[in-house]
Length: 347
Image (tube, rainbow, N blue to C red):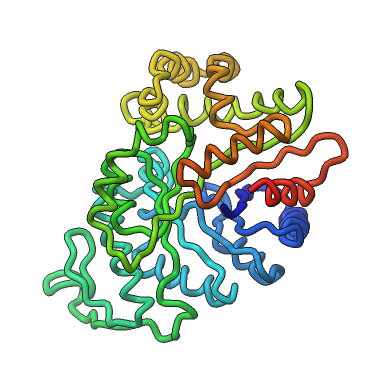
């Protein structure tokens, strides 16, 4: 099981650089970059590719609506080039509030678009001419659309790899099935090892039944806050996850259109999720955070003694996690590199 961490899309890039270089020296396997509606993540990934040597670099995620399929493929090939073959392309649908509000693009057909984007990216990396007659993307534009001057083209450069790993962030049943069928990796959020099979087991099974063996086994990246220490100090770190849980369950979507509220409901926290959403959308963020159940916080974080953390890591591994994504919280005189070393020993 590899160890990875998510980097913030805000903050001082020089401080981020120092953290990454230090964690890389301690054995960190992969760094993931988020992209919301802040600075783009591509520029930061390129920057850190230049100052690192071994750590892999992943996008988590590049939204499928904000770039054309060809640009996604070009970007992935470019980042794989500047990193020397260390890039992972993570894609996802984001949500209608961001896509339609910030990007001004209709939020339609996420499954169909995801499938076609993956097809086009892999064609590009094989340096095939981009001739594609999909339902949502047609390359070149057909007669009667545009100027009529479009011509089939292929990527000028020879990519470092033609099989850059593609990860999909998905939590809906059909999305997860599609991910298991065609992606290299899956990135679920709020992953609870003991409950994951009940939630997604059938979707994963259905997708894997249609999976091309050439893709290999499906990689899975999941995790959360990690704190290692004796006594109550580490356990209290779980409370730091309240704000994120409330934001996603309560505020990342409208009523009836929040994927994370639906996920919490499938986990068995439906009544709590409804209260969190009502409070959050009415502006009562502190009350929404307080309404997040303690059990949910415990099951979606990894905070406790060395023995407890080791047991939790074993549960993640048993649930199929190949890449543990951590948000390290240091205690006392601990450093992030020391936490990486401890976790590497445990797994």
